[in-house]
Image 1 (cartoon, chains in turn brown, red):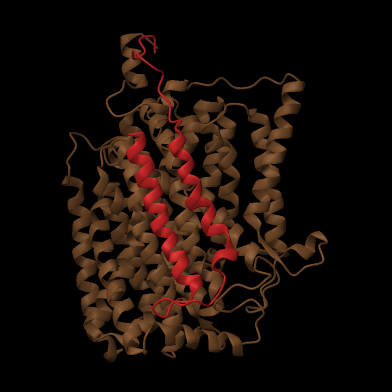
Image 2 (cartoon, one colour):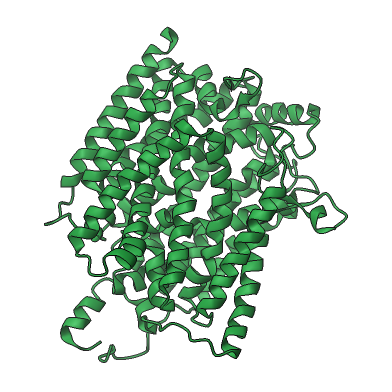
Length: 537
Length: 69
């Protein structure tokens, strides 16, 4: 413990500064009245390019990512680098899609993806399915941010759950008060710290280890010596398909997560979003370099902290351990603070997104159809508290591995909302019944496949990863494929066939409340409320 | 809306959008980069080429944004 005093002091100081900012944020770009979801939940829908860059970057590239991706590279090698193609593909992929989503949400005042589905397909049930899927996928993600903080605390020799409870209580309090303004303001500090730490790490650590060449050579030597079949510093014949489908599937899934959309809808116009599609890849470069910290840890002979059982190691501690080994104490403290604060920003945004889903698509739809703005804001604020208590309980009561498994499942299930949410922005062809059938079967197939995947390293029989052996389908091969990709394919086929069937049976479809122009509207264009007032709608 | 803007109806279609396909497809072609040699500054091809694709993504989205503004 004594060896970590400097680190703890620096960590605590930075943590306190950021917490203070969280509370002050309520007065930043102060609205006349924060008691509405547009203000509390979307920061006034008025963020420009810079704030959006920090906010969305701070939201997508979470503390867990920064801890888990290098841990994966440390353990498996090249496969873990999928994070780079994943985050290269994502922005050109959603460039046009997000602009449409922003426009139609701007016109109709949508706050969640399920709001859009509700209006587009005229089906509260389909919207409810989308909302619940979003909630289930987001909850474990919030819990995982705690794993990120815990990895840092473990490396500082801090054990016990009290520090995490305190950190989340503070987070809950300022999110309650300031809403989306809190993570938006904190993101400036978080990302600045992360950029400084990682730039220092990728210049300083390889230099100490004899250059990048020897870092990669050390990793190669380790994987050559290991008996595991899938590792190595490049891919082999069997995991290339997994690499491709995992990168592509993850890219498709990312902006279906409700919290990703929260940052997008908070921006003030279409150009802010489009400019950010060119600017956000700066974080992808950062993530690529962070991934390589896994190899630096191999070259430096870093050992992860052992789990309490004393037999297995917690690979998630590999980056904090590497920093501890290589950096002077005060800078290690800064690095730990970067990871710790890095957990707060996404945790805040995710809890706001989850709370908004509950408020808009469950509370408003089923309990209080005529909820006022102030009532919506109050319900969201309270729900955001509950969500955080739930996340802490997830970590305290359940095995953290459970959250990791759930997050893996989360990626697969959130993909099942793609036909309604993403394709819905382009076509109204699908029948609501077909979409529901596709969602259900995609989900079933995905869960079944995940259930069949063992993990030989941890000795788990089920839910051991997302790489599904094609031999399960009867193919004579050792190739694997990403589960979400197959599940989505099933979903799309069923949705299309279901649509044809329901049309043939003349089953009534829901009305579409949007019109073509809504998808191209920009800042300053009339909104539905304004139109209602002028009577021209 | 009953009072549409004068001129063409709004759209996000443009031939420039095809440029977005490039950074989506390139990172998925593992045969392009799944090798150790040639190395660049000590980085195996697998790593430096995929990091370089980030640049392709930035350039493509920037061009599309500028040309369709």
